[in-house]
Amino acid sequence: MFGKKKNTPSIDSEQLELIENAQRRVKQKKRLYIHFVIFLIGSVFLILANTVLGIGEDVKLFGKEWFLYAIFIWLFLFLYHLFNVFVTNKFMGKDWEKQQLDKLVAKQQNRINKLKEGFLKEEKLMAQSKAYNEVKPSEKNPDTSKKKTSELTLIVAAGENDAIGKDNKLIWHLSDDLKRFKQLTNGHHIIMGRKTFESFPKPLPNRIHIVITRQENYKIPEGVIVVNSLEDAIDAAKNDAQPFVIGGGEIYKQAMPLADKIELTRVHHSFEADTFFPKVDMSIWQETNNTFHEKDENHDYSFSFLTYSRR
Ligand SMILES: NC(=O)c1ccc[n+]([C@@H]2O[C@H](COP(=O)([O-])OP(=O)(O)OC[C@H]3O[C@@H](n4cnc5c(N)ncnc54)[C@H](OP(=O)(O)O)[C@@H]3O)[C@@H](O)[C@H]2O)c1
Image (cartoon, rainbow, N blue to C red; front, side, top):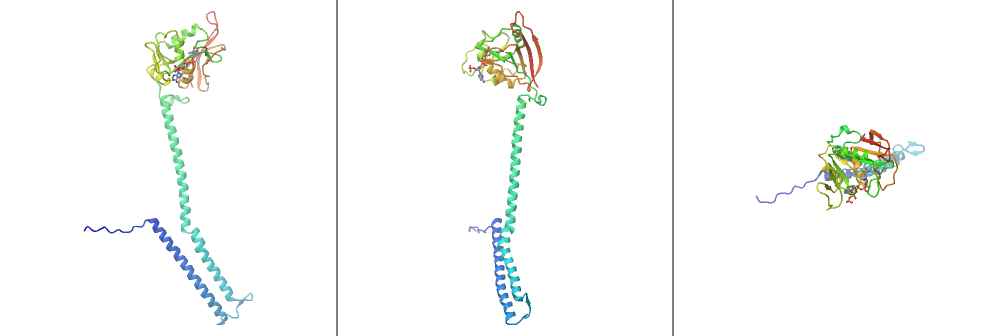
């Protein structure tokens, strides 16, 4: 009752196959050996039949006894048998077939794996672009993207050579441009770099200032929002239907790929400067408004109000 359970030997299919194969090979070699012995005895018998018993004494082919041809043909058949056992069965037998089949299967598997990898990569890219489109309308197919509720707008005045400032100051004074700036940004969030903020004598009335700096304890007047990245600045203005990025050069450069609109006052003159507005890529942006303003007694330069929207 409490005796040990008898261990029944178990052989897996691979081992069984090996054993069967070995048995088959032994049988093939045995048959070859028997063939060899019969061949030897048979040959001796044929020689004796002709020379001792005189069977077919007169039968000659091309001047040679018939048994020589018989033995020669038999030898050929034996060699063919030998070849079958040691060459055909060994290299091109069932094992060989199986090996070739395994190779083919491995090759196919490899191809399937590569295809799978390709699909996964494609899927990942599609997922990424979907996530991107949900944040920002695609440049080519804005209609297919989720509708954005706010319109991030860059507002800037730049010379013909894209100059916007020198020594942390504006290079010109154009009263109508300032009036337009005030009118457009009135009541909105205005996002700016720390240097631009410091170029103002005091915060502008009726606008929410968001200042971007990498400094941890940057001191600012009450009511001004300080953030440490452009993303945080945009987030702080998310309830505004049209937040404005008002400069300077560093911030325009970072914000341009995220912007939906550009309000550019192009001052028709080239200026010496140390800060520049990034080039407006016309393959991405299209001009939707262009209003020219002549040079006059209040304006030292002529200029144009240009509006760009994404294509
Ligand atoms: N013509 C125009 O329409 C116009 C408009 C605005 C300004 N401007 C001119 O532009 C010039 C100023 O531009 P600017 O390029 O020198 O400076 P800016 O863009 O106004 O400010 C640069 C500063 O912003 C902060 N900052 C930039 N990228 C940041 C990031 N990713 N994360 C956190 N903080 C970041 C850094 O502040 P910290 O150093 O404190 O870390 C950096 O020093 C002035 O000459 C101004 O008059 C012209």
